[in-house]
Image (cartoon, rainbow, N blue to C red):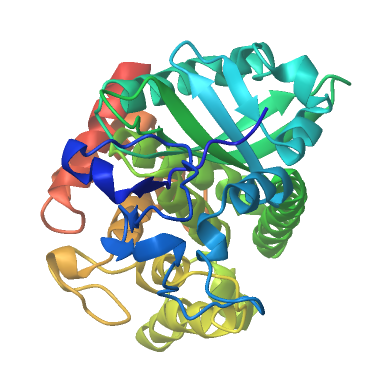
Length: 385
């Protein structure tokens, strides 16, 4: 099927009629010829070349407007070109388009593109075509999957728009189809690799956090519990998935700096004196300094490590931040960390009951903790109870 050129040349005698046929009309050598796209007349069959393109035997029409060249462009385009009826049937398709579907041109004419569309992408395809047909948009760019004749699943990025008629409204659409199958497969491979790397990272951070507990058997399970509490509280507060992941990483490494604290201080069964307490407080800064050397950790992860001992009233450490100046993830984690410390036995204290710990958390609202975070934490525990 010949491709229909959007350009034409007509005798000057028809100019008043403003005919806009989509085929090139042959003219006799005595006719003046008018290019309706450029508004240029060419008398006595001689055609002035507005692009400066001349043949060896004299002046001629620009090659780009010749029917044979449009047919060649259609046949040899490096992308698929399709003319679709409003019900999605293929009216014309070039060889590259047919090859994409794994069929011949003749086999595809009259078939619906939905026949080859992946089942999960049919609704998106119908919605996209409807937007173009109804004039909601002049152009739709659609990435979707097709199932070839040989059942191989392939990906395309298509640009779909109305195909103008010479007279009257459009009755079909044109789709320019590019094969992006290899690109999509590469993306899927990268996504799989990224998931594997993320799992390795999470496992490593979790393992490091648990290893820190080995110095103090009384805190066994603390890291896993505060991670669980933090994620539940973060979800209650509406954190997005990325923030939840960063909260999880920060919770895993929150006590990293305790590696720098001597056992005589870390494991002391009684109260710490002023010097020992000052030394213990350095673990937040030291943990931040160590974790900062891990290039893949986001700033918000480092914030949890550095600021989980800040207080809402500004009396915390290491930077004495106040109120909302304390990063949100650190404010969330602080509540979970203190709660778990209260209900856990330590060398210097007995374990509190959950009820007593919740009362203490509530009492510290607006002093030690962010009132908004405390309210969400209490509500979360009431729901579980």
